[in-house]
Image (tube, rainbow, N blue to C red; front, side):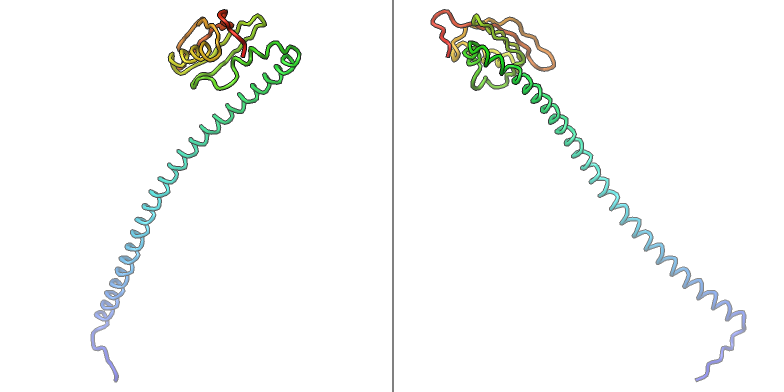
Length: 180
């Protein structure tokens, strides 16, 4: 079958242009829909990644705090090891100090940290330390008096940086105080 277009040329050109614009508008509409879908997908992905980044930052801060505490404990351990190595020759040389060290053998009351311990050969012991509360200092004094049979004199207490700093002097109880 033969088809003959009897429309004038300008109408034929107008129809071709109209089809061209319809196809172009359809393609542009499809491209815009695809671009909007991609933009929405990227926005959701960015939000998810921002939440993950925030979580990772919080985790990194926790690791830094743990690492800082670990380094602090390593320094304390090194200092305690150094002090122990300094004390070993003294203990080996003069065994008379050992009974006084026995006063502090075993478990101290909880939440007490001794920062200084000075042992005298005459039986007197000078102690400095820190505690969380005054009742913890009282528990230490009670422990020394009842379980270690020492006579305790509290020298000084001071609250600083949320801790109680204390110093006390203890001596063998004259009423049958026996070194254990």
